[in-house]
Amino acid sequence: SVTIDYDKCKGPECAECVNACPMEVFEIQGDKVVVAKEDDCTFCMVCVDVCPTDAITVKE
Image (cartoon, rainbow, N blue to C red):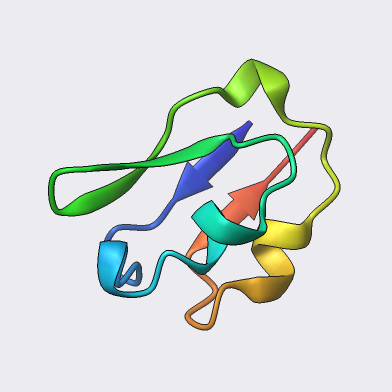
């Protein structure tokens, strides 16, 4: 599962995860980043590595 802690996430102003994810799992919807294609996640952990606020949790 891929979860975003919205208390920590800076949303579209950051969007590092959106840009870094090779599988395009994340999308910007309005004023927040959402996990749009969780089934496509390959657990590469790039999103976790690039997130400056540690807002993303990935669990297989």
